[in-house]
Length: 460
Ligand code: PFF
Figure (cartoon, rainbow, N blue to C red):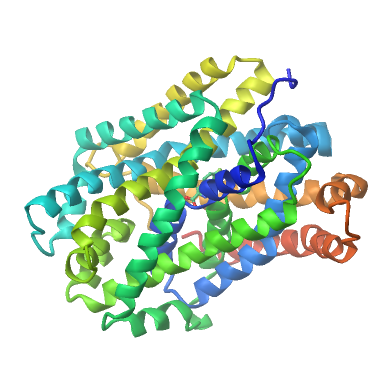
């Protein structure tokens, strides 16, 4: 069953695909908005610590588990760490399934804003009512269904052809352009009056305001953003050949991913603190920050903004696509490897099953009974927010904890050393560092945060 597994075309192809998985709506949409909800500063600092001390060692662990076994999540954990660990593989597949179901809806929003900004660029920008527009678009159930269906079809289409032909190529072209536009936006945003306040908000840590719940959110988001904790990087690692240095690849991916999240936040907060009335609009709907704040910047500050705005939103959609395919790949590869389903059938089956849940997420903002009103966690209303909270703050941290324990304590050192250290260097220091983090620091940090939340009984 394993003999005809595909492999990445090249080292660069792998790095681009994995970076494409990591960089997505988590950086552009989710990080800025949860930073807002968690009062910036201290939250950002905890996030950076989580990325370095927990996320990066887990990413390396996932790549090594995948490459060693050449299997997807369930089979890989089972083979490497022991039969019971397969259960955590299933947990990861479920997590990817649920995450994909609502992620698709946000990706659909960027398609809408592509169309909107294209129309504005042609006919003129109507000025600031972007908050109301956002509310109207998410409240339109029919529109939400059409947009997310469109995006689901695109995701299935790419995975259908296998990751190599579709995604490597897409990531190669789109990511550099996205970085270029972000840089231009950054330069423009830095010239705005509120940019100083934006830096203060993001980088002045006031620990008095930090709650245990915020620490859990920072931890969960570090997993979300790096695509770890649910087996996506195990699956991508399973298409990896021996030539690639896992340490270097992980360092590059983590640095790019974190850099983009910070840059995106500086841009958005500069706009929010510069434009009168923007704080209220974003405050009414933080979840829409990416869509509410940036049109102002494009149409009032950025040279050639009218040209760049639609291009930017279509690239956001592409950044989303390079992430959704890695999520669908987790589910598809599970069906292929564990249930011997043929690739095309597996892709269609998983795509269709996920879409049922995407419908629930798409109906979360339109006043639809149950889906709009579900309230399980404090301050989270509707199916969409409930599932996002459950996946990021509960499923990802537990999945990540399982990977640290499996890699640190159950996989033999001979295996992990063999995978992490390339042949031509001793590398014991690097390996020892990783081992220390994956065995002690990462699990202790995850457990400490979970316990803090439980003791603080603050589950918001
Ligand atoms: N890392 C992606 C983002 O930040 O948008 C989201 C994601 C993709 C998470 C793939 C998990 C995953 F397997």
